Image 1: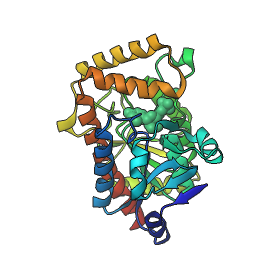
Image 2: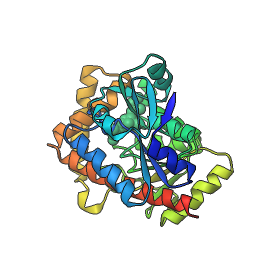
Image 3: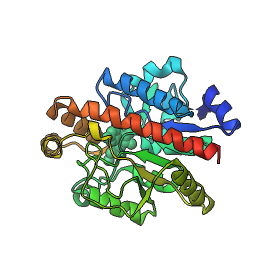
Length: 299
Ligand code: PSU
Ligand code: MN
């Protein structure tokens, strides 16, 4: 069952701004300790500074939370099970002790709770060689299904980004740049791929969200490039990604284990530079999501 935290519930009832956050990024599946705790704090603050209430999602003792109470945050940081949308009912019916929600689980929880805006670092996507492995993140279908504006820094370049964009097109998900027509690749501001549509401010994003919703359609993917000063060198990151993918292939990994393993390998290969970049972009995304939620609440 979904439980909406008190503060989030009060805000939703008063039609105030709320931003949902996933928790895999804040668990050690997404970031190493203690950067994960720092990431959680700066994202929560960024949402609040924009004037919105953060709603952290996670599963604790079988409860699916939208707005995990602060005293339980520590348990979210230490969660080691990854909970995607398909796992939610299993996690609740089997009273999972602690589970970190992915983007797919979080947009579902947000939708069921009456939250319109969601922020993360990067979304999952179509993996390289998906034509062989079949590995396509459930994030993409969940964004297509639930009418949430998803704010992210694009997707990491270890994925097949052209196929990810094609897939989103097939699923009728608008991919919209925040003041850009370049599809960002998480650590870098530009993947070399173009997107047709952009918005210049939170007002534009809020208008798009409302019109999309009134058509009865699913989510919007708003992509925000990493702040210039935090951007990593693209040849360095490409090299790190190649090394990391080789490691994952060597281990013969499949399923939900793939993404956390690649993330950890990239961190190692960049000697932690990737972690600082991840924090900077996650904070920036949370802040923009907060602005959009405020705009939606005060049209
Ligand atoms: N990409 C990142 N950091 C992350 C993830 C993806 O740069 O932490 C996490 C998110 O929670 C995302 C999930 O929803 O991985 C996707 O996993 P998969 O590829 O197994 O669908
Ligand atoms: Mn997968």
